[in-house]
Length: 462
Image (tube, rainbow, N blue to C red):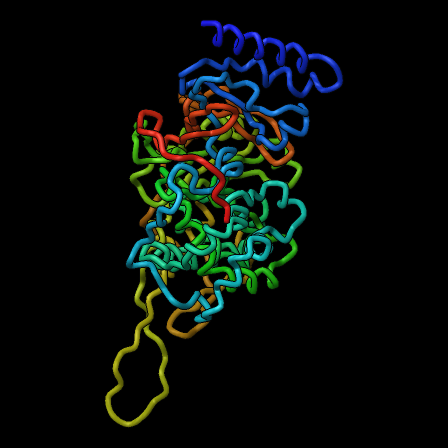
C-alpha cells in the first residue's frame, strides 16, 4: 500500500509540474489521460511518440511507473517505432502468399530490391504535384528503415493484383479522354495490394496518393507487408510513368480496405489497425474538386467503411457529390487482332481488354454516369483500329450503384479532427493499441493481444 501511495503521489507531482509553465500547454492534455494500474484499457501517450515526449518533458516516461509491475496500453505504431517493428514477436517471419512470390518486377527487372531503401520507395510513389503532396501518407514505407524488416521483404504479384490492373486499364482509357477529369477525386478502397495495382495502371494518367498509415507486424491484424510487396513489384513502372503525367492530372487516393479488420482481443494478433486520412472539404474545393468517386471491388460493398462515413457525409453536405463505382463493372471483352497475311489459313488472334459495361460500344456510358465530359474526338481502339465514338443510342447494360452517404452511428462517429495533412481521427479506446508490462522503468513484456500472454519486449530494429 505504501508503494502504491508513493507511485500515485509521483504521478500527481509530475502532472502538476508539467501542466503549467512554458511546456505546460503541450503536456497538460497528455497528463490528463487516466493511467490505471494493471489495466490494459487506459490510454498513455495519446498521439505522441516517446522520443518527442522525453524531449519536451526533460524526464523519463518511466518515472510514471511504480516499483511494481504495471500494465499500460500504448498506441501500436508508437510502440513499434520505439521498440521495433516486430515488438512482442521478435524473430517471427512474415508470411507472404505463395502464389504471389515472383523474382522479377512488372518491368521484368530483378533489381526491385533497390526500392527497399525507404527514401527511394517514397520518391517513387509520392505525388509529383505540390497541391496533392500534403495528403500523401508515407508511414508504411518509412517502416523499411528497420533493417530486420528489409531483410524479410519480398516483391509480390497476386492474381487479385493482375485482375485489378487489367480492369484499371479500362478506367485509365476513360480518364485520359475526359476533359474535366481533374474536377473529380477518386478514392480507391481496395485491399492494399489491389490499390497499389490500380495506382500502377493509372500512374501516367493520375496523381496517385498512397495513404497507408501503419507498420507491418509478423502477426498484424492488417497484412500491410503485402502492400509493401506490391509497391516493390510496381515501383520501377510507377516511377517511369510519373514522368509522363500531364500538369492537370486528376488525383486518386489509395486506401487499404483491411485497415478496420475485425479484432477479437486475441493472443495471436497484433493490433496494427488504423484510420484513413482524407482531405477536408475546403482543401478539395481549393483544388477545384466538385465530385468524388468511391471505388470499391464489387457489389458486395454497399456503403463506405465506417471510419470515412463522417467525411463523406460532410463532402455531400458541402456540395461535393459522392458516387460509388464498382471495379467489377469493367468487364472483359475479347477483341480480334489484325495479323500479317501469309499463305494458308490464319488462326483467329484475340486479346482481352476490359470495358465499362463489358463492351467497347457501351464504354462511353461511364461519362454519363460519373460527371465526366469526354473530348469531342474521343476514340476507341478495337481490332487494331482507332474508331471515333460517341454516346450510344441503346440503353446501357450497366447502371451505377444507387448510393448516397448517410450519417450513421459508428465506432468513429464524432472523432474527426482537422490537420494540415488532411482529416485525421482520434482513435477509439482499444483501437490500434497494444498492452505492455513495465517494471523498474522498462518494458518487460508486450502482449500480442490484450488478453494474451506476454512476450519479451525490447528494441528490435537491427
